Length: 250
Ligand code: WAQ
Ligand code: MG
Image (tube, rainbow, N blue to C red; front, side, top):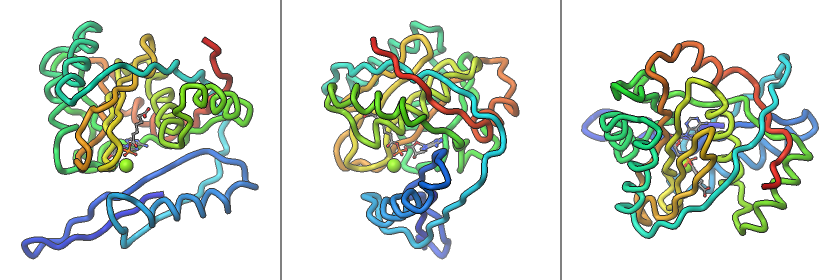
């Protein structure tokens, strides 16, 4: 699903991204899911969309199964502290200063994208073919048994929400690709102030107060290997169906 709004300014019209969502579901669930996605688009805190597009495609390929990343919530009191945590974590795994600074430029920009930016870990160069749109991860989901186990596990941590579950599934798919070093995410919803950083080894690290309440900026950056094969990576993120199966009990 993608929802957007046209805004006119200085005799030009811009399409503003309001909300997006994607998943892999059984046929019997389609009507319920379409209703839920429509409601989400219509009630969105970023504003009222004037266009909602819902695409339903049959998946014919075999699903790739992955494990979800382990979840940790870090202590963080302010956006400044969040910046320090992110800087430290990424420097420790070898991401250059330039790569980190360029990532923050994307995440703090008022021009929010529909997808994610791809940034090379050493040179900091942006690689996504369409810089306004970014790369939108799709064809991702969770198996029924894993879904129940995850809900139980997140309930104990008091974070069993759709937002957390969808972000965890997305981060698990993204970091399952060997060319992805890390993902950084800030919600573009003005009332959602917890973000995260994820890597295959460190897992999904939630960062409270990554932005101030009311701010509309946000985005996602995938920091990738300097020699990553961009076309193949984008194909994996957009097209290869990946499903979370099994939940860790650590
Ligand atoms: N693929 C690529 N980029 C995406 C996708 C996707 N499927 N979905 C969203 N983005 C990008 C896009 O630029 C959005 O503007 C930005 O991410 C933020 O999206 O554990 O709600 O859906 O409590 O607002 C983090 C949860 C929630 C943290 C993130 O993101 C936690 C969230 P939003
Ligand atoms: Mg959002």
